[in-house]
Amino acid sequence: MKLLITGAGGQLSNEWEKYAKEKSLEYVALGIEELDISNSEQVSDSLNTHSPDVIINCAAYTLVDKAEEEAKIADLINHEAVKDLATQCKRQGIKLVHYSTDYVFPGKKEDQVRFPNGYPEQYKTGPVNVYGATKRDGEKAIIDSGCDHLILRISWLCGAYGNNFVKTMMRLGTQRDELMVVNDQFGSPTFADNVVDWSYKLLQKEVLGTIHLSSSGITNWYEFSTSIFELTKISVKVTPVDSTSYKTIARRPSYSKLDTTKAEQLLGEPMIHWKEGLKNLIKELTT
Ligand SMILES: NC(=O)c1ccc[n+]([C@@H]2O[C@H](COP(=O)([O-])OP(=O)(O)OC[C@H]3O[C@@H](n4cnc5c(N)ncnc54)[C@H](OP(=O)(O)O)[C@@H]3O)[C@@H](O)[C@H]2O)c1
Image (cartoon, rainbow, N blue to C red):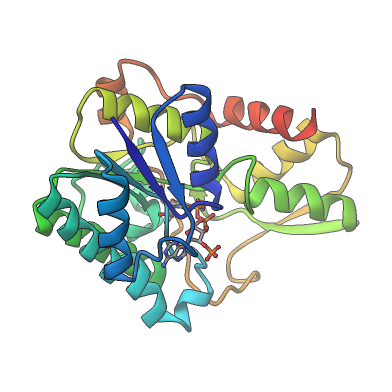
């Protein structure tokens, strides 16, 4: 099974490359300079040159706030390019593994009571920001294309590569005396190494469709930050604030936990708790 990984250089694609090397998988990883997924001809050339069995699409526009101002670019990469990728996959009989997000859901506070284990896969989407809308449209385009696909929705992604909340907190915690972190957005941090391992296992089991992959447990950004500082022994004062006092350009869902019952049944294993995943990541980052 030959894999073609797009978006090389990003958080998840780097983790995929590491995994593929460790497991001696046959793969090629292409960054935007070699394969711009919004360039249909480049996509077609890459498929002809590398003849993959599976595309692992890690390429995406992921700047949640900037997407509000760059809606067209975000749509081009997260929707139009994905539509073309899926169409070409359908034509050539290639399976498409694509990553999506918890931000496709409305994330209403009251949904935490309705869905204490998280949003189920089939719940109707309703993004509250441009990024989420472009990712939702990308999902729909893949399904409409009729290609064999695995859409994996993940949340609050953190890993050893690229930028993420854990690395930002570790940096700011050593630079500042005090930090303000929001305590009214709830979800589950998910770790790139786990995502890749689960993704590959689902691929091996030839699972198709839309699946949620996320750590077990639930937290908010404030509690998450204090856990990071406890584990790293960084001493910094952290003040919890609500979203109204910490304004961002894009609205964020108040609750975006993903229900992973389906993934657990398919994988035959429980999802790792986010505190365990965090411990593993901090160990990797600090040793
Ligand atoms: N990060 C999260 O918290 C999170 C949460 C839920 C879901 N996800 C999803 O998980 C997936 C992976 O996210 P990530 O955190 O690994 O993202 P990332 O670190 O931002 O990586 C995305 C990669 O795609 C590249 N890229 C952008 N436009 C491209 C194009 N037209 N053609 C080819 N490559 C392009 C980027 O290059 P440049 O850096 O040069 O732009 C970057 O290397 C995405 O689908 C994302 O929506 C992420």
